Length: 605
Image 1: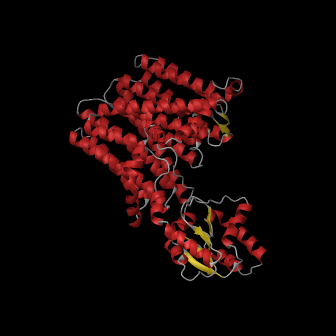
Image 2: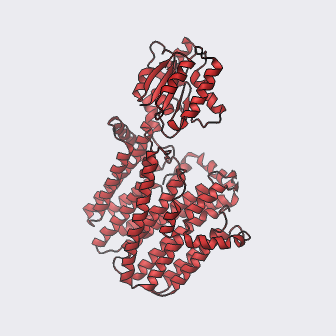
Image 3: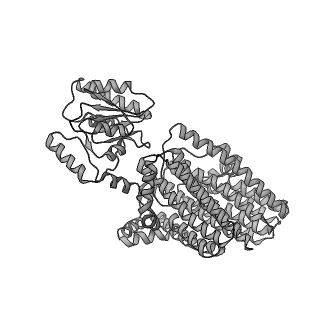
């Protein structure tokens, strides 16, 4: 149980002890700085510890935000400071310094907790200070100030603020106006019954899988049920994050599950629609795979651009300034958020079209909408990059190299080209990545299945991929390299499976791309969590993007269409097993050791 040390006797009528106990703290009273230091030393080292001024007046949710958020090793609000086990030593040092300076005498007029926080700042510690907004957190110095602070607490509805803050700060139109107004109350209902965000996330996944199963029936009733259940799944998807923010139940495992399950739900639903269409005699597997490829490439554009500019210096752009000005006009904010077709708008469109039309029409609308939004966002980011004065860091270059997913073939060739590559123009990396990818996809599409030319093009693709990553990816447009690689690999699989023209080839290709895409998403989530890229043995085992592309092209040349379908299936299963086992092992281990939890509050997916 975490420990809270109250520095002094609570003021008569104060509820600070009961509020701390309601937050799960074991409360101890200290008579002075020396006693506080003694109690701090006795507190269990494997638990959180907090030092709170006994005169504290504020909202319970202000205490919750300041003392219970698991994402931050050190945190403070006026009158209170807390440390998790990882930062316990820093807190102990700051406490010892204050005790030594004060001579262990009774508390001074100012707050000991605030003096400890100031000492932590002086030591260079990273102390998180949550945004309290209208919430009150104060240490009144006299009865009049205490009375004013209590009146300020009474004037603000703590629960209303807590419910409002449970909603993501930046979200799409559908989520903001059609889901969040009631899903936040579902989150509160879950919190009061002891449900965890991970349980709600799992319920959302199960609901989406049932929706996919209903779509797979191929009946009108099944399609209607699928649309309704997909919306229900999205409501639960919003609820899990709101529950995490409402109750501050963040976790490493939860962040990973939330991100991973979103992709699994959407792509499983695509497969369900394709199966349902097949039952009605319409083969839309190519459209389903195309939708998955387009959506995945959209996401990697977002990830790569953000990583390239995450910590860039002198990071200014006239285009970004214009965007900020447009965001200052209310209606343009929502139009711009809807144009990018975030998850709320996307799932609402899919659900309605599933219920009212056919899978083919649903996929056509999805492809057109996603293509338009991808063009809009990518063009804007290219323009920003060309007009931006920024210096990319080594960290950004490393992140882009990890997102590129280069295998042993490209790495070996890149080492030999490193000296020559440094003399090439800055545009070389994205240009050769685009040309090499376009060459292998076009060759696969324009030649007969079984011919040797796709294999030749794949060999060229290995070489161009090596040139693209032969020097650090710090150029203005180098963030385009990973998306070009993703598009080349995925589209090559799609085109060759379609050219095989044998029943079952496209579903097998869908499974293979799903497994590879999972590996690429897993790489993103590790980088976002500052956990580094997947281990090199994993990247080498699954071949890297250029190695898999070469193998797929070689199989298309050497095997018959039926054998090619079987090979795709075996590859899909093998890649899925390897990447899933390693991914689950990593995230469960990270959760057990208390790695920082990362929850996305930025662009809606």
